[in-house]
Image (tube, rainbow, N blue to C red; front, side, top):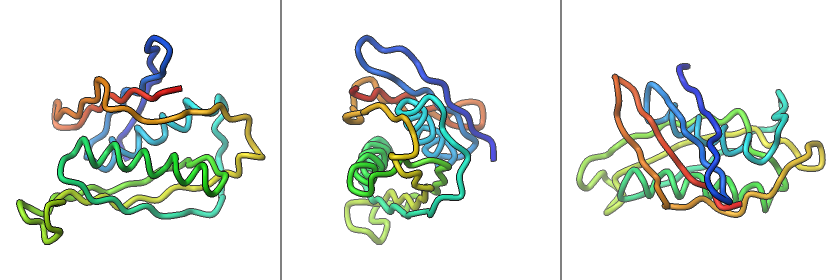
Length: 146
């Protein structure tokens, strides 16, 4: 799997720049970067995995809703979503999904927050979000409100 991320300073917030061979790879890399923004030492884990499915009308909305769903899972389950995996598909203009042709199927391992020293990350933002195809792969930049 070819993907990576880097945390970037962003005024009072934090940003993640991620790269991946596919949209699924780069979305998962952003999610891994989000976990790293919340926890300096993201543990290797065999924690129970949970799934997330998101449908959206655009790639940006899909990414926003995916990351927002992970933050929700963190808050509801009390877990840090790590070891993220994702696939992204486009179903065409009608996509068989009404007005939401973009579909993401993802999973993450949920490390109990009680086991890690995690910082609060309040929300994902649309501020400066970009998703670009580059050099046969994908690059994403996302700012998180801390």
